[in-house]
Image 1 (tube, one colour):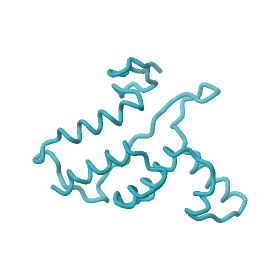
Image 2 (image 1 turned 90 degrees about the vertical axis):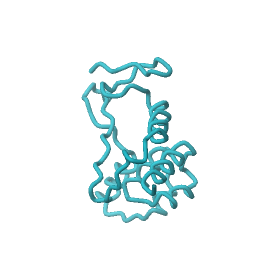
Image 3 (image 1 turned 135 degrees about the horizontal axis):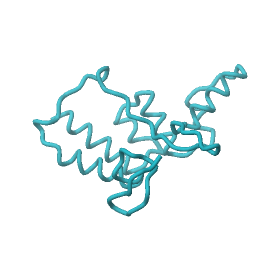
Image 4 (image 1 turned 30 degrees about the horizontal axis):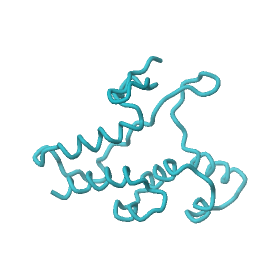
Amino acid sequence: MSGKTCKVCGVNTPYTDWDFCEKHAYTEFHRLLKNKRKKEVKRTRREDLEHPMQPVGFDELRTVRFKENPIIRWMLQQGEVGATFTLNTIAAQRFDPRDREQLAQLIGYSVGGFEELSYARPETIEIAQAAAALLRK
């Protein structure tokens, strides 16, 4: 699989449909949201939203796989041994903040509530706020 080169920093990405590395994709998405004209923004019911495409890459055996979320993997492993867990149980585990952010988004956290999460990064909050502001216009 051949990727593209980030338009900002020149780093090669493993993705053929991305013009930016993961770091700069956030920045570009935010810029696009800010520049979107009000008339182009359509109000969308939550049920009609499409799921974002998960990144694809090679694993250690060079099998092309979707990027896994370690929290989801952990939850599945807990279920296999009959363990129960809550969001508080998950919060006590050591997971990357980006994986925590993704889980919050996947379970439908409100944008306002997301802003209060200790692991939510400022750039992610800013993008979510911009998207919410466009929907409210």
